[in-house]
Length: 125
Image 1 (cartoon, rainbow, N blue to C red):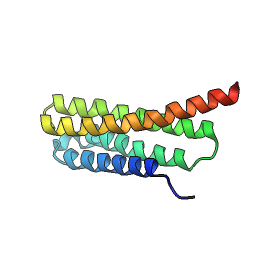
Image 2 (cartoon, rainbow, N blue to C red):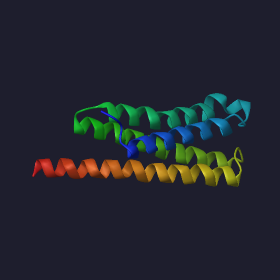
Image 3 (cartoon, one colour):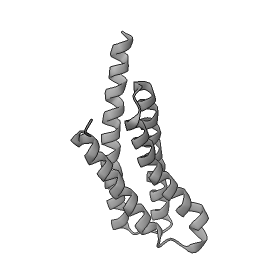
C-alpha cells in the first residue's frame, strides 16, 4: 500500500530536522561529544525511528504508543536545543530555524495522535 502524502511530507520534515540538528551539533565543544551532542542526536533520530515504527504497525494502540514516543523525543530535542542556545553553542538564527521546524513537526505528529485517540474513543463507545 502506497504511503499517503501527509506521512511522506512528515517523514521528509523529520529527516530535514535530523540533518539540521546533526549539522549544528558538529560545532559544539568537543567536551560535549558524550554529553549534549550525543543526547541531542539520539533524541532527534528517535523522533524518526519511533514514527516509522509506529507507521509500520497494524494495531492502532501500538501505533499510538510509538507516535507518542516520537512526540516525546521531539519535545526532548526542543529542550536540548534551547539549552544549546542558552550555552551559546548555536546562534539565535539557528535556534529559531530548528524551533520552527520542531513546532511544525510537533503539530503534524499531534494531529495524528489526536486522530487515533478519537478513533479509539469511538471504538470503545
